[in-house]
Amino acid sequence: MTGGKSTGRAVGEASVKARRELAALNDALTLAERGLGRQSTAALMARLLRVAAMYPRSVDDTLMWQVTDLVTGDDVSDPVKLTLIRMGWASIVQAQYRAHGLRLVERRVAVKAAA
Image (cartoon, rainbow, N blue to C red; front, side, top):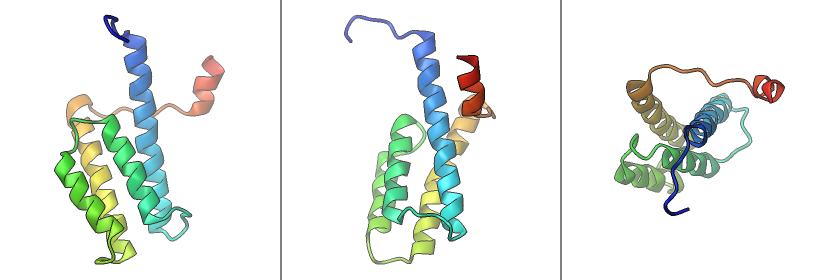
């Protein structure tokens, strides 16, 4: 949309969606680290890249490409790949914490009830 203004609500909704994605990635990583996850390291890396795109100022693109190369290659084991993905996730969380402080993600039930 050209010439239009973004409303505070639209920006807020995008922020909530991004925070939910970040929290969901944390859950998926935790399951994978415990050996309970069903997602491959490649799928987790794809999720990390999607979340990183939602936070463009949090992570440098060249770092993400280096992590992607390591995760998709055969040079390191799966536990090391999970650690690399977790480190990427943690760098986004740390950057957001510095920028905005600690904010909880609302439960979807509460959001649906309010609607």
